[in-house]
Image (tube, rainbow, N blue to C red; front, side, top):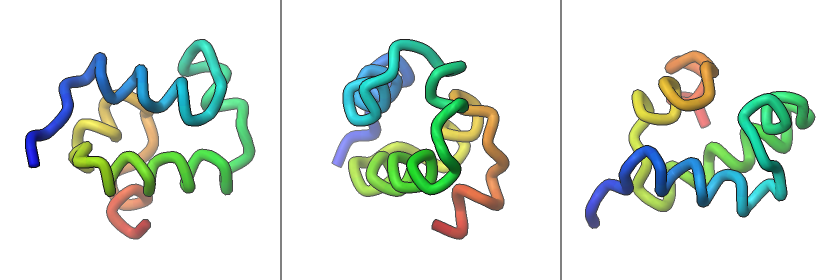
Length: 64
């Protein structure tokens, strides 16, 4: 499986959560954020990639 690029990950994230920006995504409840991140991990996004794009710590993403 090829790892998606940053812009592809953001597009998938915004589509999954029906948000238009990272600020709107970070305004979601913690449970919604974690569910979306777990789904992105299953689709091939790396932990560090998600950390960089969302600002959520690597340890939190790693423990999903």
